Length: 180
Length: 184
Image (cartoon, rainbow over all chains, first blue to last red; front, side, top):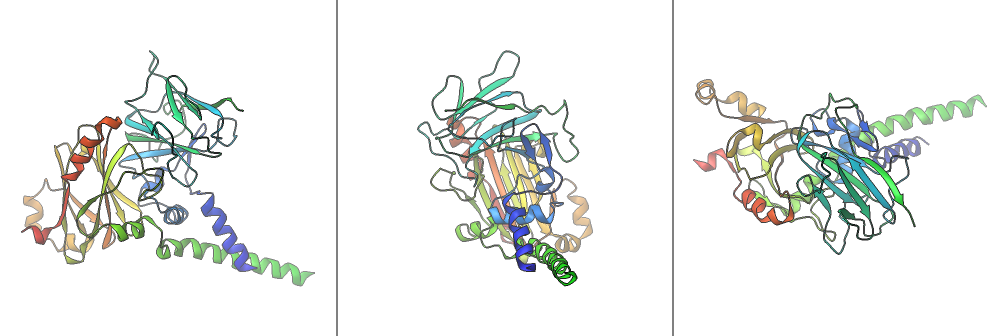
C-alpha cells in the first residue's frame, strides 16, 4: 500500500513535470527558479528524469504551452494561431516539440522561429500559424502529429523569479483557427 | 472498521515518506539524466561540439535548434579550470551545471562586456586556498565556484537565422576549457 501510494505519487509528480513557483501568463508557463541553484527537489527530479538541461536564469527563461487559451491540448492536425508580442528580450526563439522534447520532421526542415526571422505587422506584433499544411506568412509546420508543445525562450531578459504576470509581460495568445 | 482506517492511514503516511524519498534520491540514481548521457559521448576537461538536434536524433531532449552548442564536462579534482569563449555576432551564453544538472551560474556576451568570455572555475575549497595577494592583483578575474567536483559547462551561440549557423558553429569551435595547471 505504502509503496503504491508513494511511487504512484512520484510518478504522477514527474510525468506532470511540475515544480514550485510557476509563472503562468495565458497559455504559457515558465519555472524561472528551475534554472537556479534554488531549484526544488521536484524540479531536480523531473529534470533528471527527462534528461534535459534546464535554461539557466542568467541565460534566459523558457515558457511552455501545451494547450490553447481555452485549455484544449494542442493538436497538430489543427491550425493554431499565435498572435501578439513577447516580453522585452534581446532575442527569443519559438520551437515546436513532441511532448518528449523531440523535434518534428517536416518537408521544410523548420523547427521554430527566432525573433529575427519573423515577419511582423507595422506595430511590431506578429502572427505565427502552427499548422500541418503550408500557410502564408510565418508558418510553423506540425507534421500532423497529435500532440505537441510550444516552447518560447526569452534570452537576455528581465523576466525572472520576481516577475509577476501582468501588463509588462505580454505573451502571444494561442487560439485554434480551424480543426478538421 | 477502525483497524482498516488505521491501516489506510498508516499506508498513506508511509506512502508519503516513500514519495519524498524517491523524489530526493532520483537525481542521484538517474542513468538517463543529461550528465550521464553526455558522459558517454564527450571526453572530460575539453570542449566538444554537440551535433545539432534533428527529428531522428538529439544529444538531449528540448535542445534549442536555433543554437550551436558545445559542452565541457569538467572534473576539478586535479585543480581549477580556465575557460575562454569567443563571442559570436548574435548572442553567446555560457551556463554552468552541477553533476546533478542544476544550473548554478550563467553569463552571456553582454554581461561579459568583451570579445571573449574568460573565467576561472574552481571548487569552494580551491578558491579558499588561493593566496590572498593573487586575488587582489587579479581583481578583474572572473571566478566561478562550482558546488560539485564534476559538472557541465554548456556553451551556446545563437544563429538568428539558419544561414548564420556556420558562423555560430565556428565561434564556439574556438572555445577552450583547460585545467589551469596544464596551461602553464
